[in-house]
Image (tube, one colour):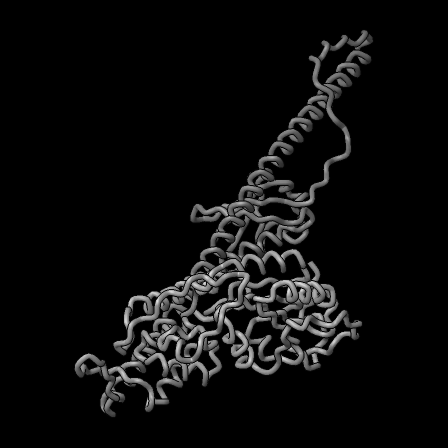
Length: 487
């Protein structure tokens, strides 16, 4: 689906993303006479939405948007076919505030409204989706459209970006107004309006027919914010003033404004009854001060709760990080120990095989020596040498080149019974092992001696060729054991 994002252009220009316009694209055919062009700010757009109870299709476009040129003829065609639907066209360069407040991030974007409530939206030059969404929302009655804006997954979701908002808050707000029953006056409640005929435009109600206590949805303000402020004790009119003054974008800013601007001319909370009519009395200065202090305390409690929640999340995150690091270190240590055990077992087997091969060679050499001695004695006695008994068959002995090892694994047995395993280069001298032990034990070098089992030898600063004897020469390759002795 072709779209043109606001981020596709470079920074520095004057479009809603702060970018320069791409090269101009030839314009298509003129728009239908049924398409209204909207410019200005968000209040102008809200006025257009309040002019009718019918479906409104808002088309956000730009003169430099290629996909928009593709979909514009279809938009005009639908405007000619569906005269009972209001078609609005908004150029994002001319109406930057509208695009920003309505959450437009790419062009083309189509948003569907009824009675000021957003029913849904989609982005991209998709003619079939445009027509199908138009028919879908057009067939919905005015009464069902109010709830759709709270559950719509796309576009500028009411309450989005604020933890006090969301679909649940919006439904509670509507339930609150439904539960109120009658208004503050004794006039009868207006009867329900039947669904609008999709083929006949519904008449716009006059100012006297508008309900006096309808939810603030028709005023272009966030109903979730209004409901929350009313729950905190502010009147509906005062909450609306606070949201308008702060741009209807931040709950905390609206609360601060309401606290610092007492509701001097709004309907107040203290009520008294005179006959059949309910009259609202203004609050006294003491009541206002008490209400302000109560609201400030509640706001401070909300801030403190949020702060504690954030601190608890940070603490748990740090504990998980430490726990994960310790587990990783323990796993690596176990893995290294296992690998060393495997390597030492392998090298022990190789060393045993080498010892067997050496023993077989020594036995062969000894047998040859005895045969030569017998032959020499026989020659002196003038008799034929006795034929030696056939030696038992033995397995052939490999006489290949001696295997070269890359590492020497040394096991050091400490005086307290502990064991240290270390890895060295085969060409290192015994001095390297001695220095390693001195460093680990933290003692004087002259007080440490190393003893080997086979061949038995002592290595210290005063005994043995500790500086010239390599680990290979000391027969500690590939594995070996040294006993650590302290004076």
